[in-house]
Structures are given as structure tokens and as C-alpha cells.
Length: 116
Image (cartoon, rainbow, N blue to C red; front, side, top):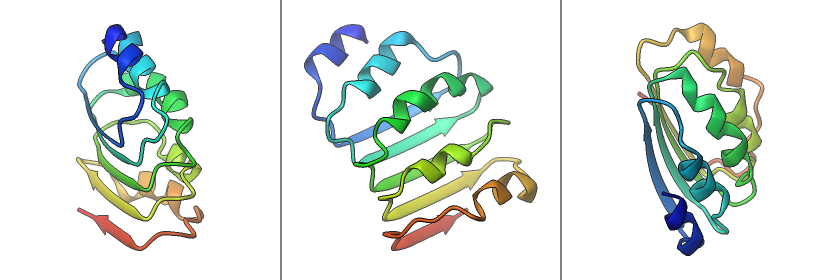
């Protein structure tokens, strides 16, 4: 995946399924993007914490976020994406308490929110 990050810098959409440890190649691919607008992230392991700083680099360009979340990690990183226009959240087994982390987050450009 390291070679991919050297030639792909202009992806606008990215779908990531994390079922085990996040590779350095995947982190490089995410970091190298210059105009990432749509992200679909499925996280089934707590190991996905390693990817959060790389995702945060796209806080200004990301406009659509889909999360399929089955992790004990905090959702507070979602509040970094102030330009989100669409958010779709799916929680597998997550309790309402974990969702409350986003209750004070502000998304001034949000047009669509879906919770399933």
C-alpha cells in the first residue's frame, strides 16, 4: 500500500474497513490525499486509533462521513470535521452513552444526519 500512496494523491472518496491493526501504508495513503471529501469507515477493532491523526488532516475537506462503528474508541474525533454536510452513523452494539460524546459538537454545514 506504500506504493499506492506515492501515486494516488487526489482521491475524493475512500472506503476503509478496519478489522485488524492499521498498516503504515494505509496511514500514508490517507495522509497523502489532497482533496478527500467522502469517507466511509468501518471499524471493528480498537486498533483504529492509529488512523485518527491521519484522518484529522482532512478536517477542512471532508464533507461526507459514514461510520460503521463497533469499537470502544471515543467518537470525539468526529467533531474535528467542521465542514461535514452529511453524517451517517451505524453503531453495532454501542450504547447511547458512547453516542453522547457528540451531543455538543457543532457542524455548521450539516444538511443530512442519519443514525441507524
